[in-house]
Amino acid sequence: MAARFFGRYEHSLDAKGRITLPARFRASFDTQAFVSQHNDRCLALWTPEEFDKQLAKMEALQNRSAAERNLARVWSSGLAEIEIDRQGRVALPAYLRGFARLEGQVLVNGALDRVELWNPAEYEARVAPSESALADSAMLDTVAPDLGLPEK
Image 1 (cartoon, rainbow, N blue to C red):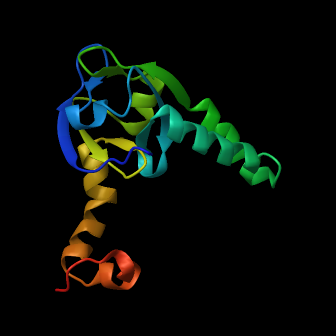
Image 2 (tube, helix red, strand yellow; image 1 turned 120 degrees about the vertical axis):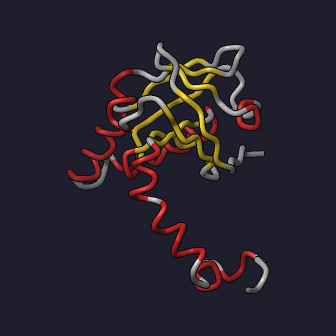
Image 3 (cartoon, rainbow, N blue to C red; image 1 turned 90 degrees about the horizontal axis):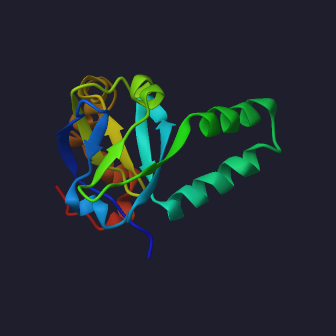
């Protein structure tokens, strides 16, 4: 069964550029993970199984348009295979920390098929407005009415 991630945690980068994964997420990874640049300036942490799925999608893009080939190039050049140590820490390469503007505090969010690592200010600017809209509307009723969520 595929790993599914949910929840939000606050952690800090240590002096070596490592972040500790929440215990809830660690069991899905064993000792290996893949980290990539992702949408909206966050990093995506993939299990080996989910990474294989993403890799297949990117391989398919290489045979399409120039823009899609470039997307596959950028994605593959902006990822790294990383180890997870016994304490659940992952060392994030400097170029990926720079891309996501990670320093100090880091939001570690479950995002269904991946774990996302966010600079809190980036999250606030890019994701929090949607969170507010969700709280103030019936957005889930219109976007995903078949999820079986309780009525307002």
